[in-house]
Length: 157
Image 1 (cartoon, rainbow, N blue to C red):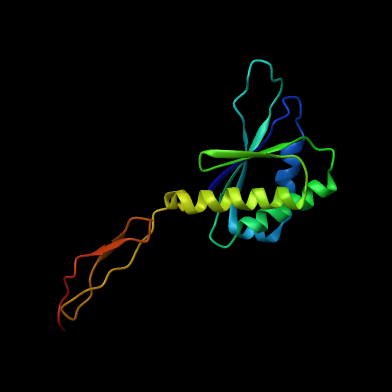
Image 2 (cartoon, rainbow, N blue to C red):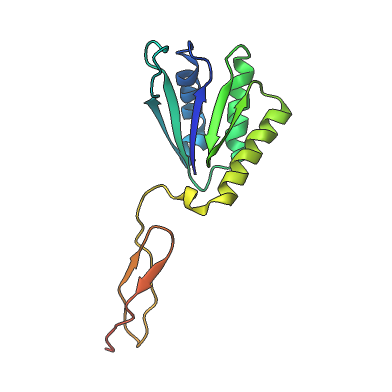
């Protein structure tokens, strides 16, 4: 599932990189996701480089893990500006580390994950498996979604 995290504050240049560093230090986030800090498209009124976090969650990282990591960061930085989390065509803006905020993050991520299984793909192609008939081995190709087709051709030895 692809997630985009950014600040809504036009003049803030340190919040997103700080959250990025925090998430990179979280062993669960680091182990089960791919994080990138990338430049956000600039408006005419924005000065300097404003960055966003582009994140792809793997299967091992739950929405709750990410929400709790955000809450820990926010607790350490209560004056940080609001953060917008975009996923699956929707977005939420969060201002604090309350239980309600954690619940909103988890619900947004869970509904995006349940709504579009294609969102879970990381763009890697897989090498699926296939079953062969005839007592031999078959060739299989995977399409990266867990689907595989085999030619079923084999030789009996």
